[in-house]
Length: 168
Image 1 (cartoon, rainbow, N blue to C red):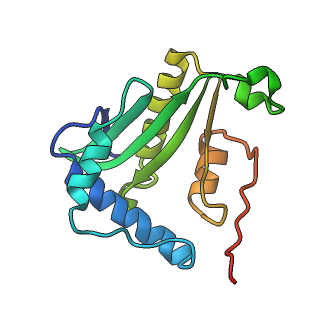
Image 2: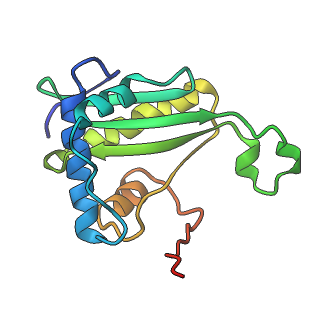
């Protein structure tokens, strides 16, 4: 097992994050080319760096560092209870919660503990903020991410997202 450092993003992480994002896209495009695309590559490192370094106190970004290179990242958002929680049906809206917007790791670092370390970091951040729930979405047909969340991380399926391509 390799050693990974989970740390806040810093200037210079954009190149590794862009490499991660492109690898992430390649993986999902191979599974479902009708649902995923390759992100535009020009300026991608700079764009990724602004995403890693931006955000406020309700945003959590951590980079997985391996030998000085950003080989993965997690981005999450803290959400307080819905302002009209007493009128909502789902209990989720009544809870302070964290939503994971993205977890990406270069495939050469899969199954080495890096993804687990990133998720544990975001879970701890959520607990420290008073969150009672963490939610995320992943592609249901992924033979890697679904078992990772269910078997490795202990998450349960809670909702189903439906989609339909509309044609005239």
